[in-house]
Length: 80
Image (cartoon, rainbow, N blue to C red):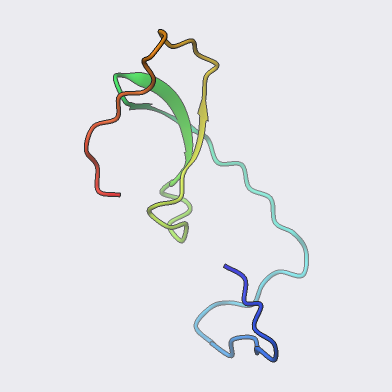
């Protein structure tokens, strides 16, 4: 989330290493997963190698897929 408050200051926290002056690229292999009624997806995040990504943040690849008229994904109860 961005801080758009006027006069805001950067954090002075010392518990994180300084950021690299150059962009860092990393390839994270997606894993097979299922959502809904066995709908297959490929999920890259969350991943064990990127634990600092929040538990509610997902990066999925799905589809393309055709659904029957009037029927989409049937997702059961879940915590969010």
